[in-house]
Length: 50
Image (cartoon, rainbow, N blue to C red):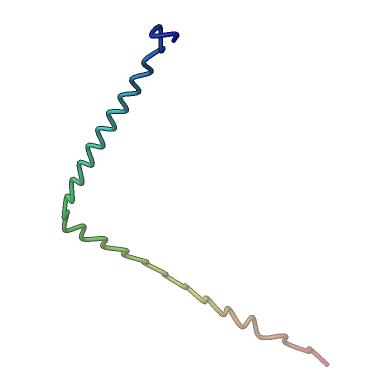
């Protein structure tokens, strides 16, 4: 008899590390729109001298 039987040992180690970091930041966005419209109307009288 052949007593030289090979022994196969398989070791599988799986390590899964999940790190979830949730950072809640309050962002205040202030948008200021300044629209200045200046309308200047100059009426020059036209004088007709007869």
